[in-house]
Length: 282
Image 1 (spheres, rainbow, N blue to C red):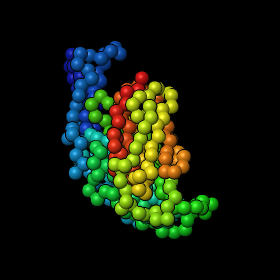
Image 2 (image 1 turned 45 degrees about the vertical axis):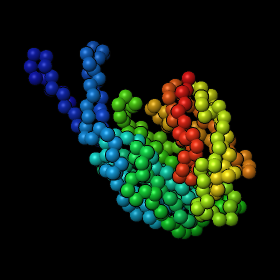
Image 3 (image 1 turned 90 degrees about the horizontal axis):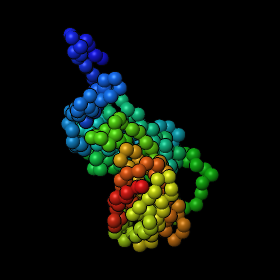
Image 4 (image 1 turned 180 degrees about the vertical axis):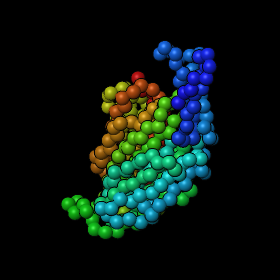
């Protein structure tokens, strides 16, 4: 709120709701005054993953058809990007809501089994991540058969810093991949260094046009392919991964805004050679 002090002098007061860099715009007759916007640092300006904590029963156990819920405390962590991924037997919809302590996240599994919950802040795992959530109950995907299928769902929360964004944004990107395997949980043989990616979509992209590339995982062992595209303001709106056979994948993504983007490709929890790529979108 503002208060008229005397002779056209005003006092402005506001209460920030989260740590990080805030930008205060002061305008007169619709135009910014000199030096506006003003940079205000609340709390710690730099991201500190060591100050992020997760709690809640949903990190460790759950039941099919019922939400698994947990809390991520980011109050003292500064400004950075919070990324939550859930890997497991069923594709899930991640729901991320801002609360006074940070963020409340929930997902509802539809198949029993072990789910891995990875929580990263500024690209670094927080304490305890990844968490193993053991889900019981009936398989609600009775119509699905075949070999073992693992899927991954991701929620990315971009917290404001500098001039990248004027406010916090919440975007959910769902990505899924499947593989045929007699040993679904055989992670010991993963070797991301032997996975190869090629295509124009790794070096350049055009606004509102599909960019494509291929990923060959034949020599990389048994794992899950994860792809993420991050822009100067928001994550990419569309990322499609299609298994075309023989452990090879076609990837398509579409960006809506110009700028410099980062393309991440992981096999399991490991970057493949070349990842992350930096792409200029024109």
